[in-house]
Length: 407
Ligand code: SAH
Image (cartoon, rainbow, N blue to C red; front, top):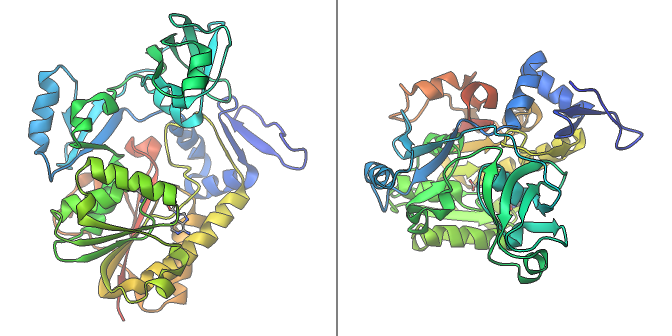
């Protein structure tokens, strides 16, 4: 620990790695509940990217071996995951030292996280810039909290960056971390690749959707797991994707359009806390519930601010989603609950509370066919559930539970 500071006088905050992670005592307590004193290794890990950047091959359009060969033939360093056939990864190198220059361009958090991994900065991601920036100037790109993430050469003036809002703003020459620029690959544009963490791919694998099933994805946007479901069922399942946000549903449609899977899915707007009321007629074979969470396991984090009240608020929502989405499942059907966070309050405790309230559900600790000898999944076993830990599994932090409906 590097000590604590008090952005608000009434609260004590703990800082980690300078000012990167600002978590209050309750959040630290929740992390200690999971990791004991080892929570500092967890926090250190999420400020860095993993050593591999994963993509999922769209197996409806391409064979992973062919995609691998075509990337390698152009000199791209890429490998197949040892265990999951649809998963390819690019090595992540770094950290490298970024030079402190006088002239800076500030990127929004989302853009800064990509630039941190070596992507170029496009004008829509520019928050602020030094008015003296002209095309050709050497600049430092910073995250909104001031952390330098890359050096680069401006491709337009500051005025144009903020005025035009499109086009390449800064060509990155050196970033803290470096890996393949996935979105610039022709395979990406052709819809053969979807950037997704390995742990997220295991979520849909654990759902194990089959052709001719009805599959509900209750919090679906931007559609990472929806697309994977379509691929695993060869487009032969009825996939119903719900999300409350029209903007994010639009992103889901764009992503599934890029993957050429849009015609194979129903994408409906709904508040999934009330699915049992609005869509109570659905009898699904599988339900995937990947609700909003505190996202403590997402990496790399340039900075993050969380209070324990965020954890409590998220867990209340999660229980509501679970109570509602579970009612759409047929008897004998399987529900997978997943989050990209690590607190027990949002994971085990939500499941326990749900199982107390609905005697028709049980935890299913079996693994779907084909995964029983999977060493990676075995290493992630946590009682009847799965937990992927950033510092132990070199992935994002994820929790996954399988539940089965008995009556
Ligand atoms: N499963 C997605 C990620 C989901 S993130 C994937 O793999 O790509 C959580 C999603 O829940 C967000 O898109 C958010 O818009 C949605 N959400 C939040 N509140 C909701 C609500 N009340 N009803 C339905 N969806 C909601």
